[in-house]
Amino acid sequence: MSGRFGQRLLAAVTAHGPVCAGIDPHPELLAGWGLPDSAGGLERFGRAVVAALAGEVALLKPQSAFFERHGSAGVAALERVLAEARASGTLVVLDVKRGDIGSTMGGYALAYLGDGSPLASDAITVSPYLGFGSLRPALQVAEKTGRGLFVLARTSNPEGADVQLAGLADGRSVAQAVVDAAAWENADITPMGDVGVVVGATRQHGLDLSGLNGPVLAPGLGAQGAGPADVAARFAGLRGLVLPAVSRSLLAAGPDAGALRAAARQLREDLAAAREAGSAHH
Image 1 (cartoon, one colour):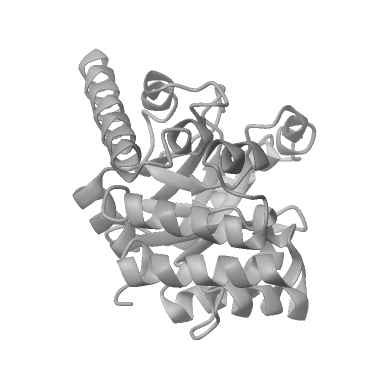
Image 2: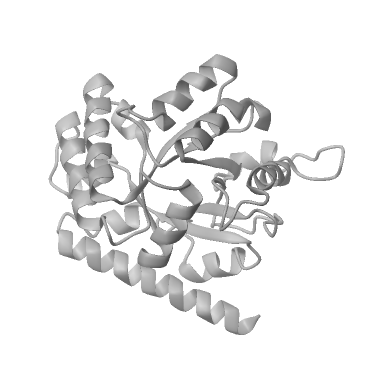
């Protein structure tokens, strides 16, 4: 693994477009693929997605929860899917949304961002709602190993507003303070920092992302209702990269590898067309 996460991500998006493809083995999806909802079924599903989409998308994003349902056998299946993704050269963000303090956060950081860990990924999702400063152990390990973080800022679930839109004494929302803290971590890093934020694409987010200098993971494309034009409009003022995350609506094209690849290419073209149409209007 060479260089910082931000550099590798920029190179991947330049080469393959910005799509982040989820590896979310929902029971319904497994059934649709003719696979059992077991650790073995999840592993076959995950490895098939990697085989089909490696080199077609910028990022793969396995959702740890679906694997953890099956206990140690499920986690072992996840490790093998991650190994396959690493071998393919495609970047992986593991969706684990960890958040803790002190040595416990340090333990999570080494598990997911430490060199040599079987769960190590290029980046992970983390929760800053114990205070952004509680992420320091993960930020330190990521910096040391050339990996990245995506910090939850304004998520696509309706319940998130209670916490994320709460106002601080200085007038900013909690979500904006998270974005600003990530921007501070990325300041002066070229071509782009390693600390991204998670901002849902399903509604207006109301955030100033112009100083981020990092990536935005934007879930909500497809099954959750956001289309390519929504992504283009909502992230028009971003300084950094937007990575639209799609899972069910893309994976439903499987299990045929050719059909999965075709769906990923179509999505890449639709996003590019929407982006160009958006720039033409500005």
